[in-house]
Amino acid sequence: MPFNKIHTFFSFRKLFLFLLGFVVVVQLAVITYNHLSGYHELESMQYFFRRFLRGISLSLVAGFLIAYPDLFLIRYLEKLVPWNRSPMKRVAIQLPFAIVIAVIMAILFTLTGNWLTPYSEDLTGVFIANALIFAVVNVIVMTILEGWIQFVESRRARAIAENLQAELSQIKFEVLKSQINPHFMFNSLNVLSGLIGKDTRKAQQFIEEFSHIYRYVLECIDQPVATLEKELDFARSYLFLQQIRYGKDLTWSMEVPAGLMELFLPPLTLQVVLENTTKHNIVNDEKPLHIAISAEDSTLVVSNNIQPRLSKGRSTGLGLKNLVKRYNMVSYKDPVFTVDASHYIARLPLINPEQDERTDH
Image 1 (tube, rainbow, N blue to C red):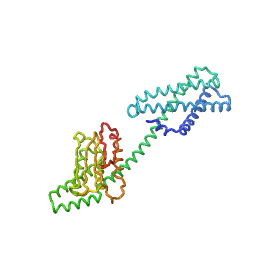
Image 2 (cartoon, rainbow, N blue to C red):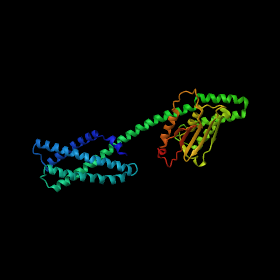
Image 3 (cartoon, rainbow, N blue to C red):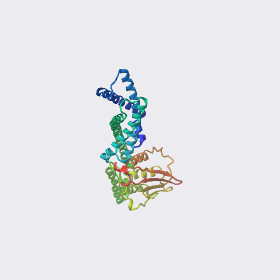
């Protein structure tokens, strides 16, 4: 756990209030016990308050000098031995270190206290007593700090999970809505209507590819990832429909190594990218559009020549924004969209579950 994250849990004010309350309770307990046991009797109320205030001052300083090493220790051990992996090993390492920190602080503060007001008791006995008190106190302090961190972290994790779930539901809705986009459906049905009277065999193929697209949508909408093989299969069906609509004015090529087919990407990624190619570019006999799908290492590359529509409405970019969000939910990699002198290029990282931890969550 990064220390800056721990620091957000324990601002100076929060830590001060916690330690102040803690040392007040400890000092009252120690002074009362010493008085009742006869180890160090109180001579008067004035002496009690003087001893009490001095004890609080020293203990508060000691508390900070103990708490910050404790937080650094917690931070280090959270990386080395997280609780969820090896709790017994964590206790076996953390407990001795907590005691060592306490003993060092006990020695320093016993010497400081003796320098300010020499103890009437044997100094060795005071060392031992203070070391025991500091050790017990530090174990309690470290336990409270650990509990506090776990509580805040679990509450934050629940909030993040709830936000992600709400966001994922919205993204699914947007993706599904884009797939049943009435423009796409009406255009497809118009094309089909024209085919039925001209080429019944091609019309039958059109229906099969059209049904394949929507079947894939229903199958994958609840899945976090889909294989590249399935996405390319979907892309072929989608491009077939578009090619029937635009004829020879739209061409496409697909050259992807077979070894990448079992890698993953968010479902319907190619739908978003391919839809943008025809949505934002002129496609006619004077300006034919070519879409190329290839691969560079473990990245799928989709490119097309640029010939922007002059009358196109202002793009909201919602499709690409949702695509980036869906990538962020399953991978540490982000898609990259660039424009060079003549081409628009989308680079879509392929996810390997063995190398990308976030696909395990």
